[in-house]
Image (cartoon, rainbow, N blue to C red):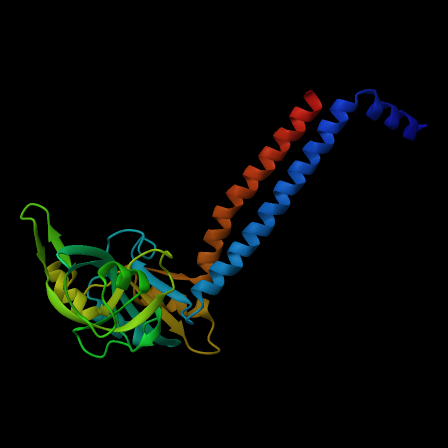
Amino acid sequence: MLLRLAWATLTRNRSRTLLAILGVAVSAAMLLDMVMLSSGMRASFRDLLLSRGFQLRISPKGTLPFDTDATIRDASSVVRILATIPGVATVSPVLGGQLHVERGGRVVTSTTIGVNPNVQGDYEVTSGREPAAPTEMVANDQFLAATGAHVGDTVSAAAGYDPQLRSYSGRRTLTIVGRAHFLYMAADQRVAALPIETLQAMRGDQATDRASLMMIRASNGVNVDTVLARIEKALPKVTAISTETAMKQVDERLSYFRQLAFILGAVSLAVAFCS
């Protein structure tokens, strides 16, 4: 009897039944797609952050790495303090900036990072070698294509530009010694890397002994959260974030998309039943 009533109800208004079925299918597909998409993004982001083995990042207090133009003062002192904390194996300071390269009568502007080539975790050298001198640098394919330079060439570069005087500051002559693939940059972004001391000197007093962030590799077998707690206690004026904390923030942002998919699915069902 119940099956007869149910079938009669479904067949009495076939258009509404069809819309209801479509609404359920659309909402289920959207939720499934968002779950699969968020899971894939989470796994890819985690693999990216851990691709060079650095589980911790340190940035200026109250910010995320490269979230603002704020920098960490007395970077050398911070590195020395970190080196004394049990469980800290490697510290890689990074300074962000811009590089203006004069080439062929024009100026090419690119992103640049200052690193310690011996412990850096931002790029992989695909040809050539790491910088071994203060006047050496590596660059990606997009930088080389835009400037027309090749590995082994020397370029004239500046780290700053004064719009009032219309002049460049912090000029240096740099030699490109390697081609590199940068892990955390956009695919079409022009990027170069040079020793952090060189970029600090080129940027002048504004960046003297400063870093935009520091990447930390914990010792094998050491609990990362324990190291994080020790860093926060030793350096209260900086923000320390672990890969797991970053993943939680990613999950929070992805949850908004899942909620949106759920709302859209519910609207589809409501429209179907009200029609």
